[in-house]
Image (cartoon, rainbow, N blue to C red; front, side, top):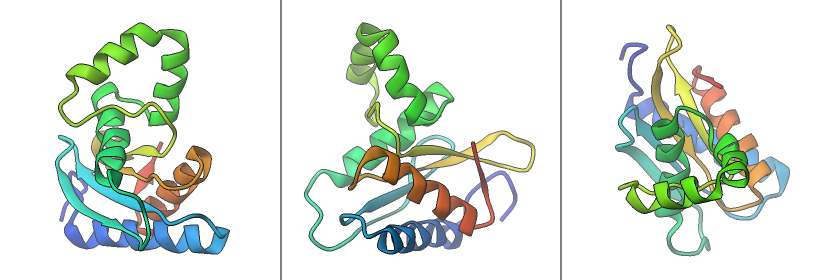
Length: 143
């Protein structure tokens, strides 16, 4: 696969490495989604004993980041700065919009977005660490 997309193999590597990082850190059970640049799911997994709605939360982090062109940590900051805008944007975002860290854009060699990873399950800061670890383990770049 080229640097303009994320293969299923790389998506599975992202998920496995995110879960491994969570295990190393002693985190609560995680879930992880990997999407293409349009926010379409390539792969999703959740660890045993996670609560329901984890796909929707993970997708809201990842697709929201892609939709606004910034990681979901920045969207959380925007929610503080412009709460009405983010609240209403969430209502029209078909894949959701979760303003909390853990949604990370994946960039291709030229810097263009080729997809995103979204991780929920522990604190948002820890979710983000795991998402970034997964992306790095797949030999891809996040911002």
